[in-house]
Each structure stands twice: as structure tokens, then as C-alpha cells.
Length: 437
Image: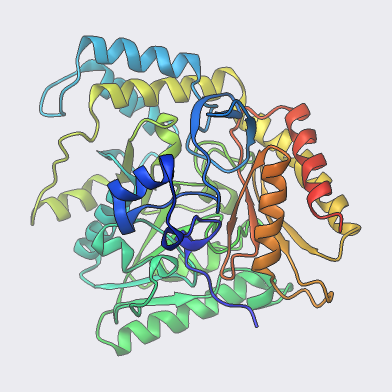
């Protein structure tokens, strides 16, 4: 029987085994909070484009990390950060031109009514603030998320991140719905099934005395195992929540900034009008920055009570990084590259799946794909142990990749947006070899 996996346990080094050298040094410094990829951690020393280099000189093709979205160490982003930090770096209590230049460039990519952007340092902070705004606007407390969602690590957001909880149950004000896949809702009417589940969740929240404040969803459901299609399936559920007075918070930390190829934001693939958009990791290509976009009247309602200020959020260096990322995405056609190369990857993976009993499904959009791996008996049951074996085989083939999904049996394919066709072929070759037995 498949066991539910906690997100930080997937493809991770077991600290209980101890270690030596650089591993021991890390464990001594971070203790139980240390999270290292792979059962044999890699010490990295450099990275460029879609490649990372280890201490021993080994170069790895990075299909693991969506943070350097336009490519590791992109020269334009590096130059922008370096020039700004050498000139001025302070908080948003001062007027600094580049901060407003960036905010206006970012807002040009967002719905016109979401004209206030609050800058933070992490997606966790952005989602925390979004929940607080939703509660202020709705006058209610309840939240709906998916079964294996991950939205961050503040106290408030961890409560709405089932995949982050090892022992604690979900609090009374959080109700989950299954991720929008065929396993939960069948292949005929995923949109209707998800809507029905959301309606039931709202009824539960009402019965508990909380009501619905927000439906918080990552539009590609990355931690649930990547569910992208059919485009538009989110509409009925979101509109039902909004009609009941709740807000739809579009968590674009992972699917945003062109990654899905079809659109700049994941929610755009579904034709949605979010009440709040949160964003993070890809904004600064590795520089720590994030943000929340909201309607001015909604933000004003929240600020009447407590207000908000973030010392490092929206600092000039972050603005320089973010502005450079937007320029690079446009100048290098990275959204179109994600669509084109992603379609090639998806087709190649589907071809491999057709010849393998262990590859049971391929899903996703652009350069954000999920590949389910199943049991040897051909039952299609998720096989986390086999997934770890494939991850290790991919590493041996010099390709880095991670796992996702409720049972840790979905490979999460999310390389930098600059991925070339040749690099995509390199990945497909490695994957075909990893599942050849």
C-alpha cells in the first residue's frame, strides 16, 4: 500500500544516519532543520545556464530547481544586482526610482485591477499576507487548499500546507479537496468534480463556524503531482468561491513567470480573474524576493487594522534583479521557449511511457511536467521506492531531478526556462536509460 509522503522527506538525505566532512559540518550548524537533497548530498561550487558543477568537477543538468528561472548566474541579472548593490540598497520608506520602475513593469503583466503590489522576501511571507488580507476582506476565517498543497513555512501558511505537516492534523479552519486529476474526479468532468468538492468544503467550513475566506491554489498543483489540463478546469470552483464571498488567491510562486509556456501566469491558462496573486522564487532568479498583488480597496481594508511593512521587501537590489528577469524573459523569448521545448519534452516522455510499464502518466504544461512512476506488477500503483531509484539513476547520468505528489512517486520536471532542445534530448536519453529495466 502506498504511503503518504511529507514534502521535505522526498529525495532527501536522512540526517539520522550522520555524516562526515561537509555533511557533518552542515548538520552541526543546522541540526534537525537541515534539509539536503539526495541520500548522498552534493557539494556545489558553481552554476551557469541549465548546468551546475560539483566540488569534484562533475557537471549536472539541472531539472530540479525552478528558482534560477532564466538560468543560473545569468549575466544580465548578475550585472543588475552588482551595479545596484554598489550604488544603493535601502528599504521602501525612501523613494528610489528603480523600485517603482520594477513595480510598474511587473504590474503590466498583472490584471489591471490588482494595482497594489506589496513586496516581501519569500513566497511564504507573500502567502501569509494574502491569507490575512482575504480574512480582512471576507470577514471569515476558513481556507480551502488541496490535499498535498505546499504554500510556505510561516506558522499561518504551514497550517494551510498539508504536505509540510508530519504529525500535526490540519486545524479546524482548513479543509482540503483532492487535486484535480483523473484519480479523484475521473476523466470526464474534472472541472465539475473539483467544483463539487469545493462546495462540500465550503459547507464544512460553514458548519464549523468559519465560513470561506479564501481558496488558495497553485494553478499547476506542483506539490500534488502537477495537474495542468484541461485548461479552464479551475473556473467553476473559483467562481463558486467568489460568488460566496471568498477570495481566490492564485499562488504563482511555481507556475508563474512564463513557466507553463501558454501564458505568463498559470491562472491565465484557466481564464481566471484572481483576487490576489502571490509570487516568489523565479522573480529574482535566485535573489530572495517575493510579492503579493491585490486590489487597492482590499489592501486598504487590511491596513486599517494592522498595516504592513517589510524591511527588506522591495529593496533596490531586489528591484534590480526583478527588472532584469522581466527583461531577459522578454528579450530571449523564454515563455515561448518554455512552450516549444516543453512540448518536445512532453512528447518525448509520452513516447518513453508508451514503452514502459513503470511510467504510468505524463502531465503538465511548458517546462513544468509531472511523470508518474508505478509498481513493477503493472497495477499502476504509485511506487515511491522505485522513484528514488530512478532519481539516483538520473543523478548517475548527471541529471538532477526531484519528486512530488501525495505518495512521492511523481518526478517533478522543471528546468530553467533557457533549456535548449539539445539539453532536452540529453534529459530524455537519461530518463529512458533510468526506466529501461
